[in-house]
Length: 409
Image 1 (tube, rainbow, N blue to C red):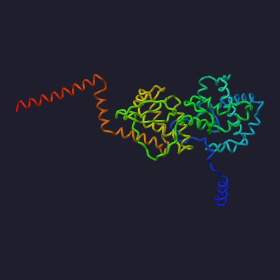
Image 2 (cartoon, rainbow, N blue to C red):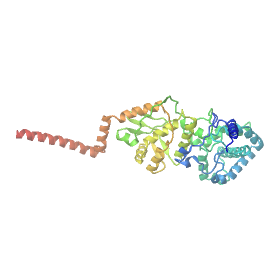
Image 3 (cartoon, rainbow, N blue to C red):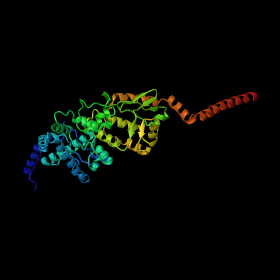
């Protein structure tokens, strides 16, 4: 028989121990199942776990000894300035703050979490130091395959350490005469994404996924938001209506423009990792930047534009897309599913204005008729000449018929 008093005591205790699961300090999120199930590999590390979320993965255990060796190497390198004991003390003092950076409860004890943060931080610092000094590690992690896999794993939203921890541990470890900062090392390691040569000075970020988003947003001006949802036809439909496409140089990949029936889009690459990078930035925006979802709205635009391999072929032909996947249908499939199960409540006002102008041109009957004639009867000079000749013959035949009727009457 249920003892009501015991239940009351239990529930009261549970409520007293309850804490807000997610605070404003949170910046590292677990991707919800509804989003993750569309492409689990895009959110899951391939070779190395960083932080607590994937630490227990059996697939990644082989890397633990390599991470320990990297951590040991870095601490030996800076032993005159710091020690493992000082690192442990710093991380232990920051434990509560670190836990609040993660959206999901961390199942590890204080001792285990401090150990994870210490080893993973040492691994990253040594990796970045090697890159900064153009030195080669003596382990097989320096092979191109592992370098590429580790590079990709460090950008996953669930595979992050708080940036302030790495920055503080680095500051504790370097000599006062060394002017190199950790943000500088980070920029050098991820320089592939810094297309606009953004300076590392005065840049702040929560973690590496957040920095990736910063690189993509460089040159994108903040705009007012509009709750209107633009109508965006596919590339093929726009092309059939006489809309042309062109690539142009821009500091920001997200800057689109439309004038004189030409949609200008900065050239972008569709490669093996493109979907992964965008998915993780979109997941970050869903929970951390819901009112500044610039990456998400750009991806949604691409999703509407590209439905089939034919859409990809047109963009490739016009120099807008570089399809490194080879197969147009595969590229289309990866593009059009970027924003499934994603919530976007509004668009940037400049995007809405652009698509309203584009839609007006698309719906123009005069433009459609002109495009149809050009497509069906004037594809080339010979076909154009044949079409004109047919029209002339039709006119002459009509005149001859009229003259014959006159003669009969």
